[in-house]
Image 1: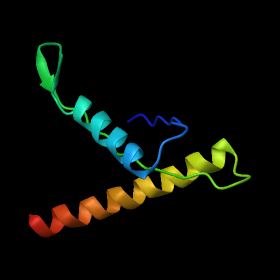
Image 2: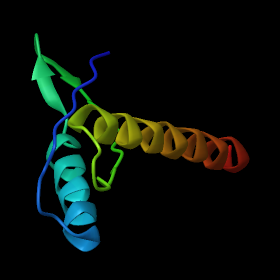
Image 3: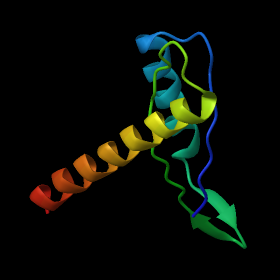
Image 4: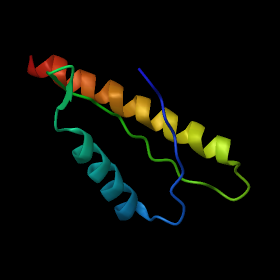
Length: 81
């Protein structure tokens, strides 16, 4: 598993949510590896900068939100199955 982070400056709530959806949709289709179909997954966390925050602090905030989303999604799947 690999963790990657990036900062997209200047996005509002709607644009950030749209970016997350577009990124997720771009990786949903299976890819071929050694002739086999492999699916890749991703989780996204959106963090907002407050005045005086460093880039590292913004990324930590987004990382925390990503794990909240992951835990929430896991609970939904447990109830459904």
